[in-house]
Length: 212
Image (tube, rainbow, N blue to C red; front, side):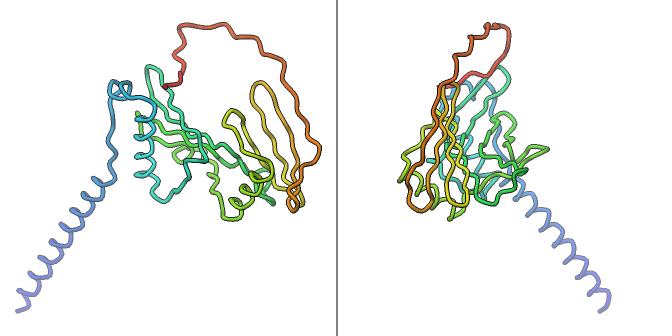
């Protein structure tokens, strides 16, 4: 009787071990991301590459929920790699944020390696997640200040009484102040940069170029 009980316990343990191994295999397969050859990726257009990047994001960062309307999606490539970049149109810095704190606002997906920056970076910074309060503030600013163009890097600093809005690109910049209660703008500063000399083109560099 005791011998039969021992045998039964052994069979149960073996069965449990096999079940665990099977579940681990299934889980691993479910987490496996399809890799694509460079030739295959180069045959794709911008929107197709963005769709592949979104699938990678969904599989590797399933808890991440982002509004794609808040990002500008672009695709870049050279002879070695294809990248999809999601650049946040508005960079919002909430009141009370530590001045030493550095948020990551943008996402870059390497379609060759399936690595996602900043999440797979060795020295990664905290990725900014918009809160309900932040979203309400941004909507208030859009209503009273106007829309924001992806042609600029748009940064909003929340102060005690005002929002400080900084817009800039390689050609010009603007600094604006918007009252948090009234939505009224204070005097702004706007200026243009002196045109930069065109750098000499080096043909042998394998630089990333934008894919349309």
